[in-house]
View 1 (tube, rainbow, N blue to C red):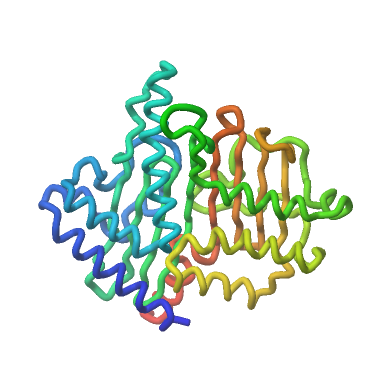
View 2: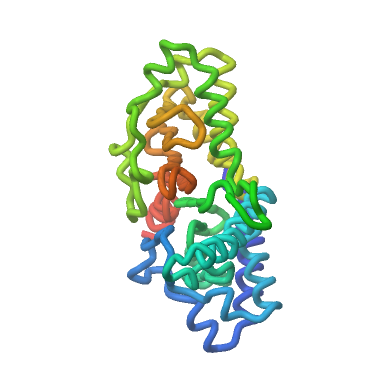
Length: 325
């Protein structure tokens, strides 16, 4: 499957090289680090500064090149969602300012950091990331292969309650598609899928460098669903995978198919009623998707995709170093 990703790897290399060439020496120093830098696997979805160069410290042309780099790692739909997440921080800024929330100034649509690890023009592995509040996109490039996890998309507020953007939902499908699947289950299958009447306060794997998939309950297996229910689960799976650029998303999907979709499980925790706290996960170890909406009066979504084989390009790097030695 290596050839199928060669185009994606080439687009990322070109975009990263062009972006870095447009920066001043000082900007480039902030935006780059060695591939083996000690914080390579550090990431978070919480507010706060990140290593790298933020959009706020770029001019308009540089910001455009940065966003072009982001678009090489995501599908058109994924790029739109990522942009919407960034824009939502400006909406949250105004909501918190009007509500008198302290530190509302930290919300900013340009507080998203871009960073390139290693040399995108060389032969060695390299990586790039975009990280800020509720957005974490990590791509690792090894030759003509690409790994695209960990990946995090979030939304606060999930539904904008007031103001000029009232009614806006930034990640509607992440909730709606899961509710379609849950609603399709008969009573016996729903009893297996619902693992707890109370949702956890956040995604269970947090933002750890290595995800502990053992934290996540199993629930109902794909193999134990009817064909229509399996179709709903497949649609939900593809919703997450298809945030990535198509070549990488399709390979991730084919790996799941080859491994056997029957091992994929769906679990739900919390209320089935809209507006109340809820959580769900899809797992097929070592792969998982998690969603949680419990914070800020159940109006605050976190979603994450982790894969112990591919997080940080682990399997690609192992194969690369084995060939080198």
